[in-house]
Image 1 (spheres, one colour):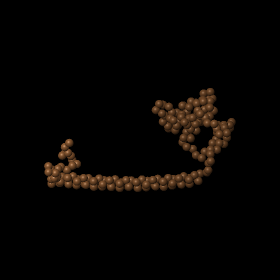
Image 2: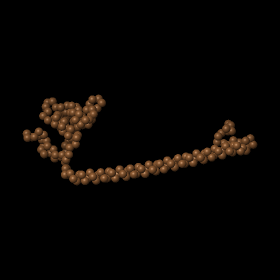
Image 3: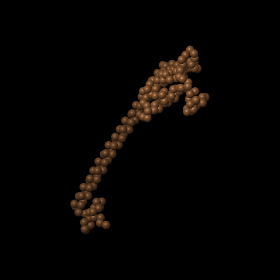
Image 4: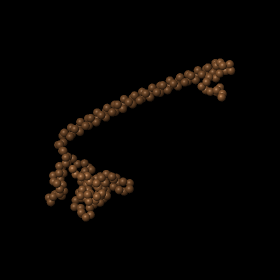
Length: 186
């Protein structure tokens, strides 16, 4: 095998001595390698500095996040202190009576979703025909429409609409349907 053209070995003259031009070529290659090493060290140093700056920015962001979160929790606690204490919903009566058209519940506030569910519940479940109760899919679509929820791509009501429809379906119908698993009351 001829090693005369190997770039890693210095060219050797026939008498075993290295010529001056070969020495200069080796010196240039050595100088170029040193310059490359310096350049790479500078780039590495720049990248280390950038990483350190990014680490500091991340720490500042985390600290700021925690400060904001703490301030918001304090504000929330102060708002809770201003609102009368509500432990649970208070049902005034156990069921519909001849003097009312439903159950009265006192809530600390009402959300858009609860309001929509109550509207749909009133529409579909007030005075429904016991022999022909509303279909869950119809109620779920009505909830989607009332709450501006998107139906599924296949045309079925949204998952949320289906869940809300199930939540407002009377328990005695769920038990009669035998398709809902009702947890025993404790």
